[in-house]
Length: 409
Image (cartoon, rainbow, N blue to C red; front, side, top):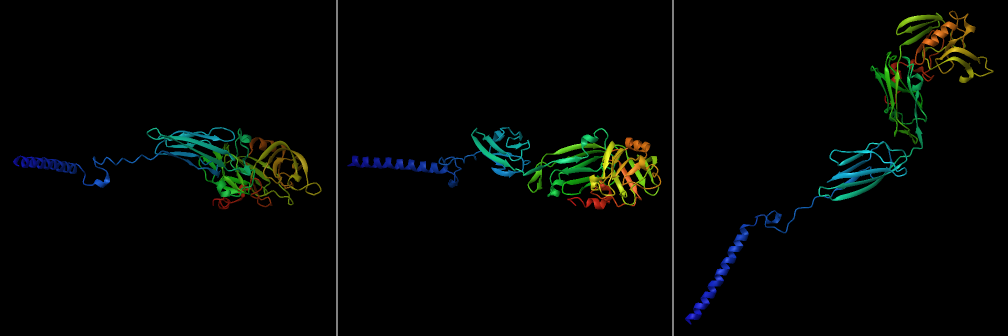
């Protein structure tokens, strides 16, 4: 009995020792566990993992758009990664559109101007830091105008490249189609003068806009004229055809002052009178217009036909004749030219159809010294003021009146 009791006690002793070891283990495990076991931040929480990095994504702007203005750049961007390549192609022509990639390789921007009525396909690839790649495709279709308007310049730059223009020369943009959205177009027109001089635009009609300074140009001025009209909506389905930039140079100041009271015309070169000559201006029935006229055309021999401004054969005021040393000063038949038939009246009376008549020597001298953009100021002629719409009647308006002709006033 003693042996058995002894054996039973020994088994209980072993069980107690085992239970003690188990309790120690539980306590040890509790000591290694974070008190905030729900956030998965403890080293013993092997069931939690770090969140995966966002996947690289590519966006295209404008995205699958139609009627896009061709001046709008195509922009491709990568998020959570970098662009590896971008290809933009004209779907019809197959030509590629050039672009620039930002320094961090996350943004590609087209630099070539797009065409009208064209579809461009965009193919872009990007990769994340681990090398995982993604592809994105898109299409961009540009607006298709019903008509495209050109900006024609008057005077034609090539016609005055060697001679320059006079101090009275307005700069004229003549558009091939009517402009409805004048303010939008005018914002894209500019004349930069060197030295700087104040100037403004004036819309003579829906197709013609003139620019003149507050006062005559300074001799020696350089004019940089621009029309950034490509992509500009003229209205009624018309868009600008192309941008244009030209340069004009203003030569010495030549101003002729024709006085109907004295029947003399004095010529001033850079402010100094260099010659005076007898003249005959328009008779009472056809008086010469008052005001500053600007020479727009010259020819050694020119056929003058009053029918070009509506006075045709059968009208008592009709005429047709060949005249020498002719320079046009308005669009309704006014010229400075030689007229041997009126020499007897020159210096004493006005007998012409509106022109300023000179004798042969004076006409040739005038022709050799004055040209496009030079000024003929007419006073005391008995005529009406030269209309602003009569080719270059720009100087008929005061500066305040002129500024009112801007669409941006």
